[in-house]
Image (cartoon, rainbow, N blue to C red; front, side, top):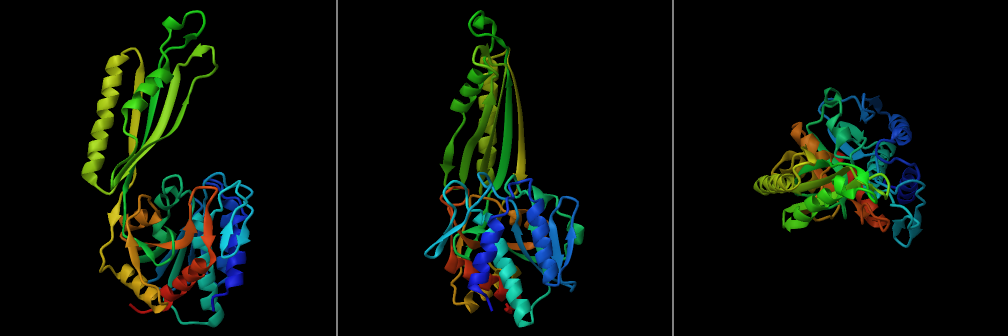
Length: 360
């Protein structure tokens, strides 16, 4: 039986463990111990992902990621009515520890009640937030699942991610020429000025209903009285439409070439790399049918909504694992205003349990 108090405590304990991307070792050890206590055989691959198996053939996968974004250190969860929040100085870490807590509670309930259930694998990944790095480096030779439910969506658990975009990251580095800013600035080439021209000419924000573009960071210069020699900027663009992605790429190339012509003595290097590929769910796929049946067994009506973000589900689907991403009760992801709704978190744990026990 799903235990609300145990679930809430488990979630609060998990978010109290610092696990920013790249620093997941402590929570990985905790989760490995939790899975072992539930009878799972646990394996850590070379990247540090946690894989648990109950040892049976033809399992289905439960998955969530272990890392959180910044500011995510020293999180102090508090309960206010039916919500769990941080103290306002950090994120809450519901993304994705609400998903982890729901999985653990669903499994604990099944084991506690000795309910017959499908064979199961559990995968907790590292560095999802930095571009699905953990899932991309997952040791798939240890994975036997062909179906998966990924608890990493925003909103209530009956919300299914129907489509996810292809994501492209880029880095542009401008090399100008340093000079004393007060004595001979005319001998310098300001890398910051060149970068500013690039940024002002590139698109920003939402380009259409399926496409976005963002400059995320800019770094340059050394001291205030030197014409800056090097400036770098990073950004991303993503879309559900491959033709739109091609159009954005052409626009970037056009802007780069124009600024190079304007500043022939500056060097502008660019690296544009796809980070993950998008997908659109097929409604009659086996995993989505199992997910919907589980939802309806709980009196939850499935809803579908495309997402502008990516999850480990993008990687799993490329590996021919029929992955479905569902909500995990989290709202306001990646902000200090993030909160988890407790009734939805309880429903997410029920969904985990039902997914393993409901026939399609």
